[in-house]
Length: 209
Image (cartoon, rainbow, N blue to C red):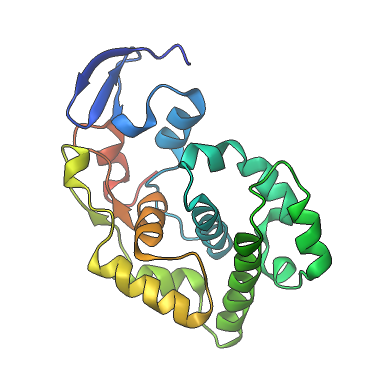
């Protein structure tokens, strides 16, 4: 546990000892709090980074995000920086290497899904489609700003995440169901679902850091 402590609990947020209210889901784990404060909900426009996050959200399926977060550096090392042009060329030897890496989640279907996703990413690039422009096109290029006051106000999927999920699958991506895709959209700032009382809500609301 961190030294942040919790002074007060309110619907949807925790009032930490450092004077900042944060979304309740990040608790007081230092790693999770740092992720909440600097990463989650910040609009991401870099195509490679978006591919990485989509892959990691796919690996999260059936697990808690904190599990993936704790392994993120190991994932980045194992997948050589999640550079699609490298991952797309992976063969059976690479799959075996990754299946033997204790630092990551060793799930063959998810590993193979990351490779398929890299190939789909490159196929889009060859057609002149920018992965970032493609994804952000589903929200008209700017964050959808919601105003939740409790976790009950936050959906697990939306018509937009369902449409994006369907299109990603059609292009060859896997582990990208509507719920995973909505979590991805929240994480990369396509949707701002920070609680209205969270100190990060206003900061990322208009596309800021």
